[in-house]
Each structure stands twice: as C-alpha cells, then as structure tokens.
Length: 213
Image (spheres, rainbow, N blue to C red):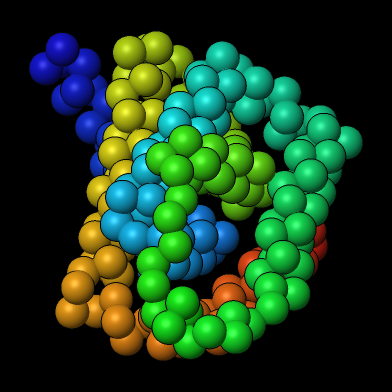
C-alpha cells in the first residue's frame, strides 16, 4: 500500500487540494448549512453536513464506475443534469424569498426544530442535485485522475473528498450554532432568508450558463 501511495502521490495531492478548495468555495451547500445551523441548531446542521457527505459517495461511485466519462462526452445528458440541479436550487430560493416574516418577534428568536432525517434528506438532496458538485466530480475523474489509477486509489480519492466536505461543513455548523454567536443571527433571520434565497438564485442562474466541464 505504501508503494501504491508513493506512486500516486501527485494525484493524491492534486485531489486533496482541489477537494479542500471545492468544499470551502461558497455555494448552495454553504448557504443551506449556514441557514439550517442558524435556524434549526447545531444538530440539524451536523446532520445536513452528513447528508451532503453521503451524496458525495454517490457522485464518487458513478465517477469510479466510469459514468463520469460517459456524462462528460454526452452533451444532452450533461445539460439535463445541469438544468435539473439548477431547477432545484431555484425552487429552494423561491421558498426562501417568499417566506413571510414572523409577526411574533419572540418566536423569531427561537431555534425551530428540524428532525434529523429531514436535515439529512435536505443535505443529501441539495448536494446530489447541485450542478457544481457534479461538474466538480466530472472534472476530477476525467481530467485529474488517470484511467489507469487502481480502484483502491479512486475509492481513497472519494473518501478524501467526502472527509474534506464533512470537516468544513461540520465546522460551519458548530461555529454558527455556538451560544455566543447564534443570538446575533437570530435577530436577523428574515434578512438571512432573503439573502440566502437571492444568493441561491444567482448560483442557479450562473450554473445554467456553464457549457462544459
């Protein structure tokens, strides 16, 4: 195994570096984890982060199976995936933008409950349908990872990407749900909804303009 790692060290470094910056790059996932952590608390934010990581397993699986090459060379399939993901982001954005303000300010300062399953499901769905994530995996497994790379190494790359995402988004959830920080955001929940919706809408529109990986 040590010899294998040494042989593919360049790929490991490249994938790890890209995975870290990809996780940290603000996007739909960042907006969703941020909002959930503020509105629904630490546990919901962590489960949403876990859901996103589970979706990374799906992206990695079809990439390892060779479907990434098929998608990358099939314009209509790539376009369908891109628009499906963008439509989902627009749907979430519209919900946030049209959310009515709570009349009771005391309620506005309380953390709403969200079940672990719902947080997990929302995180999974958001990431699995996120065109940015799909484009990222298509790029990694068609341009960075060699076709001759052993299966065990490709699985390792998937685990590295998953770990990078979980560490980053869990960190965000823990930070924003901290007792000393959360009250500051609680007073601005309505504004956070509108800003989040606007940002998601911009991200969705921008992603539809991507022509190729």
